[in-house]
Amino acid sequence: MPDETCEIPSDPAVPGDTAAASGPPDGLVLVSTPIGNLQDLSPRAVAVLGAAHTLLCEDTRVTSRLCAVLGINPTLLALHDHNEDGRIPQVLRLLGEGRRVALVSDAGTPLVSDPGYRLVRAALEAGLPVSAVPGPNAALLALTLSGLPPHPFLFMGFLPPKGAARRVVLARLRAAERAGLAATLLFHEAPHRLAEALTDMAELLGPRQAAVARELTKRFEEVVRGPLPELAARYAAVPPRGEVTLVVGPPPAEAAPAEADLDALLRAALEGHSLKEAVAEVTAATGLPRRVVYARALVLGDHES
Image (cartoon, rainbow, N blue to C red):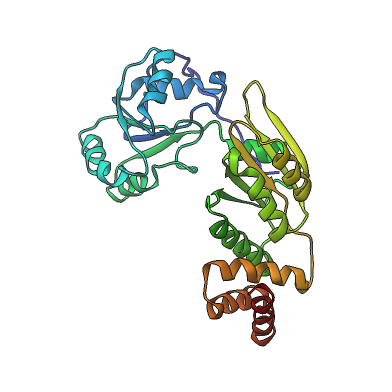
């Protein structure tokens, strides 16, 4: 276990303070906000938000409610996937003028499946200070509650909403596992797509252990654990409600891919590529001879035509 110490300030900030003993940080500050329980907002986060001149947020309606609860009134500017590039010059100008700017997402840690990465890169390249206030994160909380190996892990964010594209991504993950990747996988998923995603995972990743974490930190928090096929059947019968994070365990140790696995990889690759491209991708992923993969692809094409 690393030898780490926790620095306790002699005069820590408390809720309502506008500055810690050393004052609020300058520049751009990424502030984590609650994912469901307001009590998870840290005193330092409250202090930084209270000291911000400008607050960047995904949805001003969501963040204005948080500001009302905290009794603060910063200038709110929307920053989301569709306007981030256009907003960057304005924010850099504010930072260059010495304004304190905080960035929040609707919930959780900024940039993790949320906008802000391009702004952070631009601020760093401009030599402007960037700091963060850590806090709630649904993916890490789901990982710790899953009962699955906590490290290494690979956070994938949201899978593509369309089935064909989703299966291609999962096939590539499986290919990476064939090449040696052995990590617990983390995903966010929309509740109405959960059953389909679990079904695709069961087909392409195998019947490994997984956990579905729902409504974390909220009143109806739930974590359901089990093999992927069982979870797929459960949520196909009773669709979930609320925010969902999915944790999938690492693959078991194995040798060469079974024929069924090869077929699944080929089907997924063929959905988004030509026969030649699909064969090349699966050959590289599995290490099998190209002629073997090509022959199997032709068989699949004959059976499914």
